[in-house]
Image (cartoon, rainbow, N blue to C red; front, top):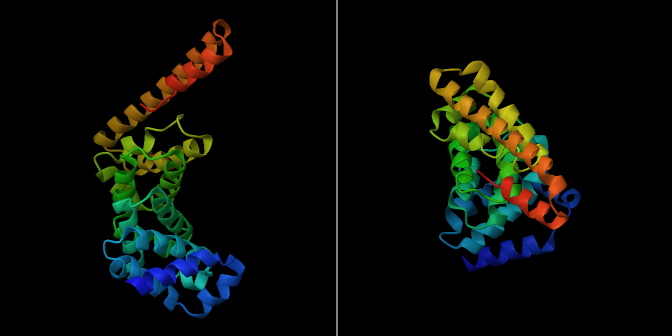
Length: 240
């Protein structure tokens, strides 16, 4: 374990530029297998080792070419999703989500992520109300996975799937809003059961209430001092 910890620490501290790391990753794909093994078995309960391994994994995947990315194995995604599930640190969670988002550019990987329970893990993570950047990454991955029928089925089948995906509409950023609308459109078109339509109605209510709150805040701006306006805006636009 000590040797693994030291090796990962050295590799991460070197901060090898992607262009320099790329020939190494493309030339010997065992580095992906080794990282997967460490995440699944080699780190044990050592949170620091798993966190460092996640950062190394992110660098490796971002440097890899399409040949490597197209051949990622199911256990690789199981390892990355275990980091999303365990939430060992915010940095490690974001790194794991960035790995998933990068890998989602390939159809085979989207299939593997859905089969590994990716939709469920991301919805469960969002239930913890993570920070803004994590939510944007969550929605980015969900948007990719819900482009597939099996991904949409997993989202709709989760009791909190639609509600959780839509609760931050008009609350995080314009980027998040775009992802939410993109995620919600396919279920409306292809999975419009009575239960789904009820959840969509709640989603529409959230949009209406959010816009109404913004209009009321702007309307009252004339009668408030700048300081009071900022405080009032922050409170009124907080999470539901």
